[in-house]
Length: 346
Length: 112
Image (cartoon, rainbow over all chains, first blue to last red; front, side, top):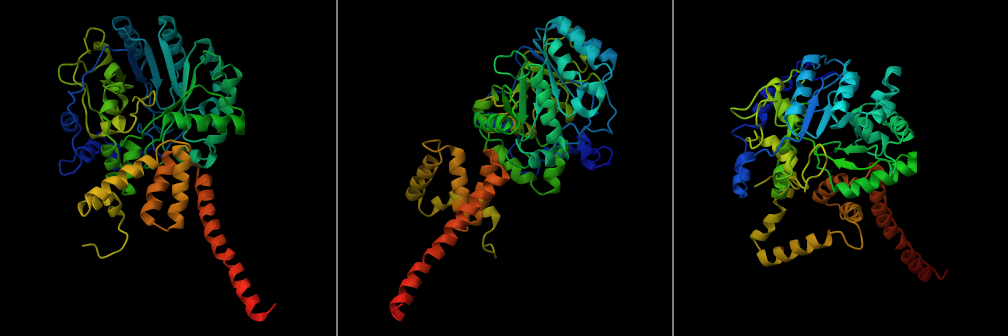
């Protein structure tokens, strides 16, 4: 499967996605209006604690739900100069966590150099590893050991505990390779009950429905992965699919868009708003542009007026208290128990 | 007015039954919500039971609703189909077990 960009699909453009989402003729309430109607103040950032870096859009997989539209045909990647800017911004802000994502961040040629530099700063490093990359090429086989050496928290997508549903979403053979990679991570200590080598899995629904109880799903995943494959992990993060990029294209193409958005709106949970991830993070794109979150990055919605536009300017800026830029896609993070890169928030 | 039976849009109007009889609808929905809460059975187990019953009573609204609900509760395709087989087995068994009544009647009439 090719990326939407390679297919020259209309919805590969952020502007077209915004046009669908923010259609003034839609009966769906605007997110900012919903906050006001719920008696909630406008969404503002707290102290900057997490820097999420998108190292590039290249990936060895082409998942049907990918909000990044990543894949083997995407070549964008972060320059060494932007990586240096990211490192400088760590000195200026109380950032405790650097969250590396992509595409497959490990495919970036400077990935290991960058993780080593980050490791020297003492910050907590998260790598969003798609698991199959570990087996994709011999040069990646030692990634579990590399992660262990730098005490990296590994967060990996595994949409379901069965092969058929996982492969439908992420590609044929992905489940089998993911299981193999999880065993390699377990073998160096990742995910073991008393280990501080954190291995957390990400569940996202394989279609136009919402995730159920994170705790209940975690129990099912733990039971099945242990019984069927002898695999252990720490936590399961249940994440809602946001109507962006490939998932938005799927919703529109299959005429599930309105029904899915109505489900998100009807499941709006005011208690989830305070915990949304955009409040304490800044998301950095491969070209150094900065955003409130990864989703705003994909929709090309920059920080609010008066805020810096590029990571090189972040060190000298005060981004705490800024107004968060919102849209109808934000219902994805406030539905039910809420959703973030760390799973449920309410 | 819709010219067809079972319009999927009507599922979203379930709550509108209160328009014609509110006190009873309020009691029904309060009870309904209570039934599906986690209790001696998990919410997931109840979802699979509901899916099986939805097939047993052949309610297309309920089948849509509880197929989605079972997916959201993390049920696998195999688990959901086994639930449908349970419903089918009970329906089939209910037919067949009446065969004993037919046998009793035939034997009484023929003196067998």
